[in-house]
Image 1 (cartoon, helix red, strand yellow):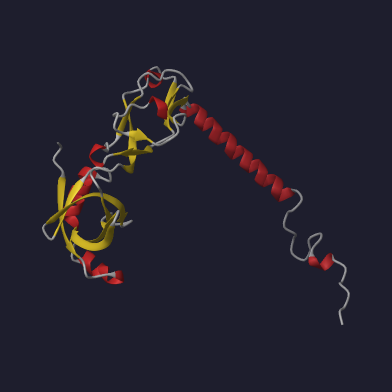
Image 2 (image 1 turned 90 degrees about the vertical axis):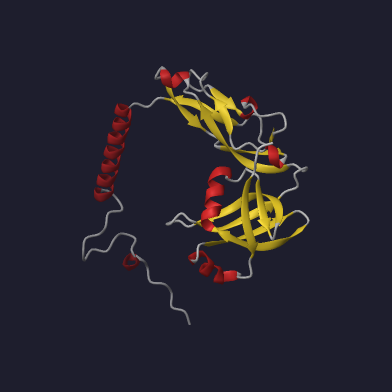
Length: 236
């Protein structure tokens, strides 16, 4: 059995907007919830949380110790500060190790497609993650997909082609595309397309400036302006 990561937390009495003071002290506010239990506000050191979260992300089981009692949890809904990139809040989902759960798992390409080696096309990833269902201890960190066999334009790999352990069920449609080989666009073709687009925009601007809809010169009202309309009938 794989050894699980551990976190130590304590019950939190600081709630609402006051939790900002906890963050200044290096403390992460969090909540633990789960099936059949009452939501519990907890707190723990941010640095310890970051160390564990980097290893397990949202699919690895963690033993959360609160008042000496261990709770098997999955980390969810981590809010990150947009500038400092430090966590602001997290949810801990307490799981039943004997009941299956659903989780979103990243999809990772393995190998280099033959189409790229032969400079025929480029690899496009249509699906970067997929929802699976499994026992908490069986959740994979990611799903690897070998893409080396892709050799021609439009060759693809679908969900049905992905290999996962027998105790893991993929919830997506089997026909959903995961990887595809797209046409190779050379730098010269990109530059030519950019030049054509710029020329088209310039021609459009010139037409607008000289044709209908141009701004009237000062002192000359535009056609169909308010001054050229018939006066409306006076109401009583």
